[in-house]
Image (tube, rainbow, N blue to C red; front, top):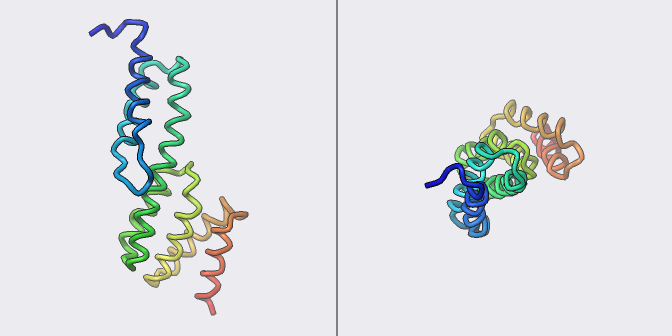
Length: 153
Protein backbone atom coordinates (compact mmCIF):
# COMPACT_ATOMS: atom_id res chain seq x y z
CA UNK A 1 0.00 0.00 0.00
CA UNK A 2 2.92 2.36 0.70
CA UNK A 3 5.75 1.49 -1.71
CA UNK A 4 7.87 4.40 -0.55
CA UNK A 5 7.75 3.53 3.14
CA UNK A 6 11.13 3.09 4.82
CA UNK A 7 10.25 -0.46 5.99
CA UNK A 8 9.49 -1.84 2.52
CA UNK A 9 12.99 -3.38 2.15
CA UNK A 10 12.59 -5.06 5.53
CA UNK A 11 9.15 -6.40 4.61
CA UNK A 12 10.48 -7.76 1.32
CA UNK A 13 13.41 -9.34 3.14
CA UNK A 14 11.07 -11.00 5.62
CA UNK A 15 9.02 -12.51 2.77
CA UNK A 16 12.17 -14.12 1.41
CA UNK A 17 13.29 -15.17 4.88
CA UNK A 18 9.98 -16.88 5.65
CA UNK A 19 10.34 -19.09 2.56
CA UNK A 20 14.05 -19.54 3.33
CA UNK A 21 13.26 -20.91 6.78
CA UNK A 22 10.90 -23.45 5.19
CA UNK A 23 13.47 -24.91 2.79
CA UNK A 24 13.31 -28.67 3.27
CA UNK A 25 16.00 -31.29 2.94
CA UNK A 26 17.21 -31.97 -0.60
CA UNK A 27 15.01 -35.04 -1.00
CA UNK A 28 11.77 -33.00 -0.65
CA UNK A 29 9.93 -30.59 -2.94
CA UNK A 30 11.97 -27.39 -3.31
CA UNK A 31 9.13 -24.92 -3.88
CA UNK A 32 10.03 -22.88 -0.77
CA UNK A 33 13.62 -22.57 -2.03
CA UNK A 34 12.43 -21.23 -5.38
CA UNK A 35 10.01 -18.83 -3.69
CA UNK A 36 12.78 -17.58 -1.43
CA UNK A 37 15.12 -16.91 -4.36
CA UNK A 38 12.34 -15.06 -6.16
CA UNK A 39 11.56 -12.87 -3.13
CA UNK A 40 15.22 -12.14 -2.43
CA UNK A 41 15.82 -11.34 -6.11
CA UNK A 42 12.97 -8.81 -6.09
CA UNK A 43 14.48 -7.20 -3.01
CA UNK A 44 17.91 -7.01 -4.62
CA UNK A 45 16.50 -5.53 -7.81
CA UNK A 46 14.46 -2.89 -6.02
CA UNK A 47 16.77 -2.04 -3.08
CA UNK A 48 20.27 -3.17 -4.10
CA UNK A 49 22.18 -0.96 -1.66
CA UNK A 50 20.51 -2.07 1.56
CA UNK A 51 21.97 -4.43 4.15
CA UNK A 52 18.98 -6.68 3.47
CA UNK A 53 20.02 -7.03 -0.18
CA UNK A 54 23.57 -7.95 0.84
CA UNK A 55 22.28 -10.72 3.11
CA UNK A 56 19.85 -11.83 0.41
CA UNK A 57 22.75 -12.27 -2.05
CA UNK A 58 24.50 -14.63 0.37
CA UNK A 59 21.31 -16.59 1.00
CA UNK A 60 20.65 -16.89 -2.74
CA UNK A 61 24.09 -18.45 -3.23
CA UNK A 62 23.31 -21.03 -0.56
CA UNK A 63 19.85 -21.72 -2.01
CA UNK A 64 21.20 -22.12 -5.54
CA UNK A 65 23.69 -24.69 -4.25
CA UNK A 66 20.81 -26.45 -2.49
CA UNK A 67 18.74 -26.48 -5.70
CA UNK A 68 21.72 -27.84 -7.63
CA UNK A 69 22.03 -30.60 -5.03
CA UNK A 70 18.37 -31.47 -5.62
CA UNK A 71 18.93 -31.74 -9.38
CA UNK A 72 22.00 -33.87 -8.76
CA UNK A 73 20.01 -36.15 -6.47
CA UNK A 74 17.41 -36.67 -9.21
CA UNK A 75 20.18 -37.35 -11.75
CA UNK A 76 21.71 -39.95 -9.42
CA UNK A 77 18.32 -41.65 -9.24
CA UNK A 78 18.08 -41.73 -13.04
CA UNK A 79 21.59 -43.15 -13.31
CA UNK A 80 20.72 -45.83 -10.78
CA UNK A 81 17.72 -46.75 -12.93
CA UNK A 82 19.97 -46.64 -16.02
CA UNK A 83 17.89 -43.84 -17.53
CA UNK A 84 21.04 -42.09 -18.72
CA UNK A 85 19.40 -39.66 -21.13
CA UNK A 86 17.21 -38.29 -18.33
CA UNK A 87 20.27 -38.11 -16.08
CA UNK A 88 22.21 -36.23 -18.75
CA UNK A 89 19.45 -33.64 -19.09
CA UNK A 90 19.45 -33.02 -15.32
CA UNK A 91 23.23 -32.92 -15.13
CA UNK A 92 23.54 -30.47 -18.01
CA UNK A 93 21.06 -28.27 -16.17
CA UNK A 94 23.24 -28.32 -13.05
CA UNK A 95 26.33 -27.34 -15.05
CA UNK A 96 24.52 -24.61 -16.98
CA UNK A 97 22.14 -23.12 -14.39
CA UNK A 98 24.27 -23.55 -11.27
CA UNK A 99 27.74 -23.03 -12.72
CA UNK A 100 29.18 -21.59 -9.49
CA UNK A 101 27.74 -24.34 -7.34
CA UNK A 102 29.82 -26.81 -5.37
CA UNK A 103 27.77 -29.51 -7.14
CA UNK A 104 29.29 -28.90 -10.59
CA UNK A 105 32.33 -31.23 -10.27
CA UNK A 106 30.13 -34.19 -9.40
CA UNK A 107 27.68 -33.25 -12.16
CA UNK A 108 30.51 -33.24 -14.71
CA UNK A 109 31.75 -36.61 -13.44
CA UNK A 110 28.27 -38.06 -13.70
CA UNK A 111 27.95 -36.66 -17.23
CA UNK A 112 31.10 -38.60 -18.13
CA UNK A 113 29.62 -41.79 -16.68
CA UNK A 114 26.26 -41.41 -18.43
CA UNK A 115 27.84 -40.51 -21.77
CA UNK A 116 30.09 -43.57 -21.52
CA UNK A 117 27.10 -45.75 -20.65
CA UNK A 118 25.43 -44.58 -23.87
CA UNK A 119 28.60 -45.04 -25.91
CA UNK A 120 29.05 -41.32 -26.50
CA UNK A 121 32.80 -41.24 -26.03
CA UNK A 122 33.41 -37.77 -27.52
CA UNK A 123 30.84 -36.15 -25.23
CA UNK A 124 32.30 -38.01 -22.24
CA UNK A 125 35.75 -36.82 -23.19
CA UNK A 126 34.53 -33.20 -23.49
CA UNK A 127 32.92 -33.33 -20.05
CA UNK A 128 36.06 -34.90 -18.58
CA UNK A 129 38.16 -32.17 -20.17
CA UNK A 130 36.02 -29.44 -18.61
CA UNK A 131 36.22 -31.25 -15.27
CA UNK A 132 39.98 -31.57 -15.56
CA UNK A 133 40.47 -27.97 -16.61
CA UNK A 134 38.35 -26.47 -13.84
CA UNK A 135 38.60 -29.04 -11.03
CA UNK A 136 41.78 -31.02 -11.66
CA UNK A 137 42.45 -31.50 -7.93
CA UNK A 138 39.01 -32.94 -7.18
CA UNK A 139 38.32 -36.58 -6.50
CA UNK A 140 35.59 -36.37 -9.13
CA UNK A 141 38.22 -35.65 -11.77
CA UNK A 142 40.31 -38.61 -10.62
CA UNK A 143 37.30 -40.90 -10.91
CA UNK A 144 36.33 -39.51 -14.32
CA UNK A 145 39.91 -40.02 -15.50
CA UNK A 146 39.80 -43.65 -14.34
CA UNK A 147 36.49 -44.20 -16.14
CA UNK A 148 37.88 -42.74 -19.35
CA UNK A 149 41.02 -44.90 -19.07
CA UNK A 150 38.91 -48.03 -18.51
CA UNK A 151 37.10 -47.41 -21.79
CA UNK A 152 40.36 -47.02 -23.71
CA UNK A 153 41.58 -50.46 -22.59
